[in-house]
Image (cartoon, rainbow, N blue to C red; front, side, top):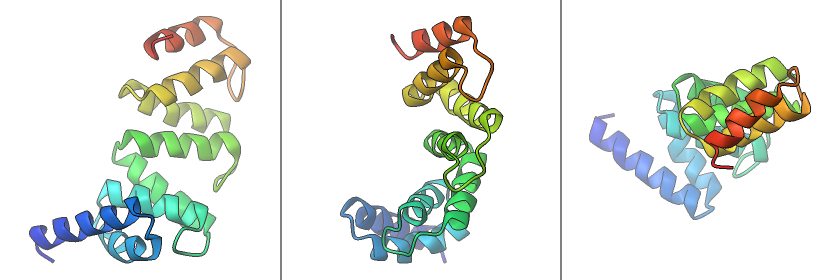
Length: 142
């Protein structure tokens, strides 16, 4: 598949996803996710996680979210952080959650900055640290 064809398939898959035509989105995006596109991997993970256009599949949701997060996509790092924080699609692991939220927060993702602040404030999955909580709340604009 040429780069132009790949871009057209990605655009079609994203449009189908946004239009909530999830089985069509899965057809387009799964092939592109296999090619290594982080955005496609993230969308495929969401569809598997929530059973959108495909039966729910926690291991596939985790696999694709992790693949996207490892490529540096902040929203996927945030999603992976939640998987570890909630024990959804992954074994609950506070340290892993903090690791992924931190990577996303450092890219400026306010949701991750806020979540990290709350984790530090409450001692949720990590040792309580009021100073770190304050710092992350400040970065998030609070």
